[in-house]
Length: 208
Ligand code: HEM
Image 1 (cartoon, rainbow, N blue to C red):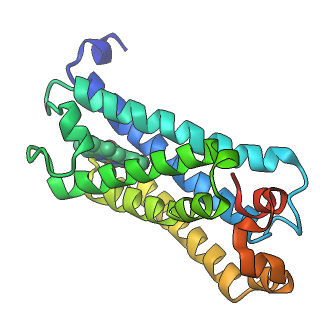
Image 2: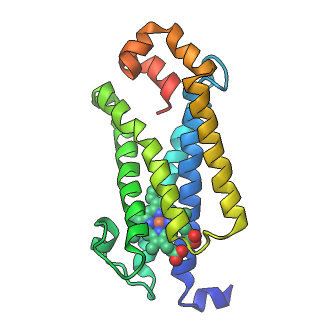
């Protein structure tokens, strides 16, 4: 422990672990949202904690991604400035393409979280449009993990990524051609107006 604390690699370890936990929380939140919206967990998510968990996972993801970025600035080896963290390709010192995926994913995460917090004050269409970019957020963060990360060859991490991608594909198929599609077709109001139908049904079908 003392060795790690004294090591100049401390912030690098913090950044790597925060990045991995941040990615896992993004993946878990997307999957939980899909499980709720496809009604794979039942006809209607009745228990409030099901939706709260979806929100909580996303909120925690923001915290860990923040820690991932701050620790990159504190790492004395690769010296990222604030501009390097916020502007894709501003820095060329470490895999600029791989890092750019992470920066775009971070903006999407912030947009999804901010619009979810402001949900009651913004048009439902806007909220839904931004919320759907969660799929791109998950994809970009996953490409970032598989291209930027030191641990990208770790078999446990690779299997975790593969399992989560498989789950996203499963829920997508469930929604497009399985019982999830039937649920939305049976409800023409929802099919035509999407999440704008009502705040109540919105919350029940789409997560935040
Ligand atoms: C949603 C946003 C983000 C997520 C979920 C995320 C997640 C991750 C993950 C899982 C890794 C792999 C860690 C490892 O294998 O050890 C990683 C690495 C990295 N990320 Fe991010 N990241 C995000 C945003 C960013 C941003 C905005 C930057 C800005 C510069 C960034 C820079 C880096 C760098 C430099 C590495 C390589 C660290 C290393 O392994 O040496 N990431 N990120």
